[in-house]
Length: 73
Image (cartoon, rainbow, N blue to C red; front, side, top):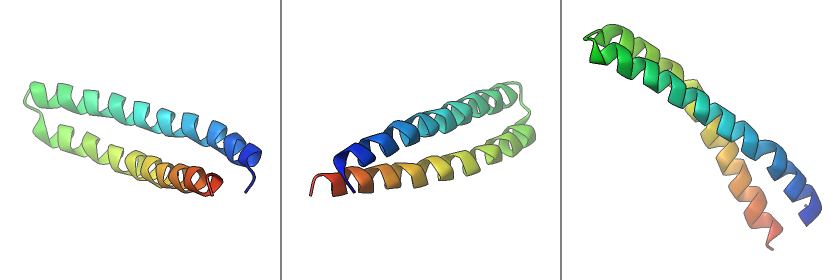
């Protein structure tokens, strides 16, 4: 993949990763608020919503790493 194409892909993917992680952060805050008032069951249930977001962010981060590494060769 040419460097210009790689940079274009990275410019699209990186903001998506940031968005997923920001959403996960907001959800974690809500779970922490529930836990702080002693509502541990709801805190746990809310935390489960983070799994999909972090999985997606991780998969995209792996893609970014591969694209970046391949653009250097």
